[in-house]
Image 1 (cartoon, rainbow, N blue to C red):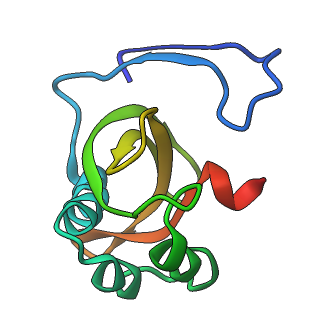
Image 2 (image 1 turned 135 degrees about the vertical axis):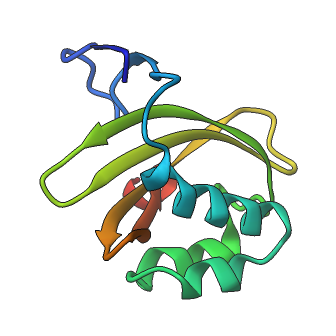
Length: 128
């Protein structure tokens, strides 16, 4: 991120963050997340889930979506990107079909040889 300001006093699931991505960043860690978001956009939820390491939350996600709304994603943007010891955590603001407000999805991507792969996907509903 070029600039990142986080409200540490927020008791939110996703901290109130203002983040400005660096336009010159290496986007390799973002590619697997974008691939999964495109699969959700194309109503290929089961295919997206099969690419992940975790099975519990995404399987439920394909059945019920977010707040009982379809898992069909209509559009998204990168909200935050944090490099962690294990990989890169990407948080996207997303809009789902039939939902009037935005939601968020996060992904953990990790290096896998010369490429990156998405290990986990999560969203706010799975933590309520």
